[in-house]
Image (cartoon, rainbow, N blue to C red; front, side, top):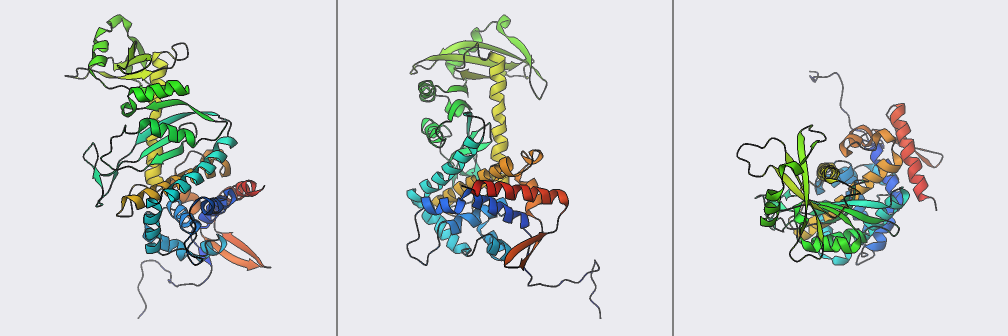
Length: 432
């Protein structure tokens, strides 16, 4: 009796050198051009014995796993079973899932390993920033809550149990310049000045953070005083404390200026006054923005911002519009979580998940490098998911001819042209 199938084909297993991730192999080549493996082995502690895995043998497969859509350590099996990806991509030894988990726990608990991962990130950041034309950047810090059913997870301010890492983006390049993995119960504003300093440390000589946009988590005199000392212009969401409410109440109706909000098209009004913290060293502009039509039973129909940007540089409406642009940081965070696989944490220990998150940040930035230097302009702002679907997940067959590897990819001319462009970028970075 013949087998009955829905579609008219036979299914057979093959031992041919075929990959379903030909585009991911090109991403690995791009990473190699940047010297990723060399940097990881240079800055992270070496294995305790000659037979142990080098740090790069953990980090490189994890970066590919996250860029390729993997979400758990078990997904490393896909890379381990891909002969083409391993052989041509230089991934000779892909550690077992349990081995990687043990390494993440050790790395996360070892300050030298965590700092080493940050140093790798610094080197990649240096290339990105110095290759670009911009030298002064806007820092958008924020926290994001990652729900986790782990033994050491704690409750965040919104009631979610999990972790609450702090991330800092350079808005002009969407670049994740620094991150700190934090307990869920930690206050979003804790260590604000130290976080700004860490972000400054991660930017190369010849560049600087010249502007800061933050929600009210950074609303304190330590932040404003530090920004004044460093010559950083800030726009920060204000708390509606007693002093701010009193100032709001003293603003006359003739002091409000109407404008149309970008995006929503709603009619709003802005006004401003001067304010200072009781313990602060300087005064600053206090800008209010409100809807023209108040919501029912709404006592205060808007929000307040503080800024040290001079009036002649930005009027109140321009400050509001500049601050609203920090909303793009939410999209950056979404890409880190959904695109780079940081929506879930794979381990039961805080330290291991901290190492995982730092590698996820590295995978995110390396993807941005591919977009900026290896992809055509029309692909430089699409999501990781789009690149994964259109370019990473392409079938390829590896053949050997005259002692040379040839990867034959099953794709159209346009995709093939993108592959060639990405290879050219990798070669350019690899050249001395």
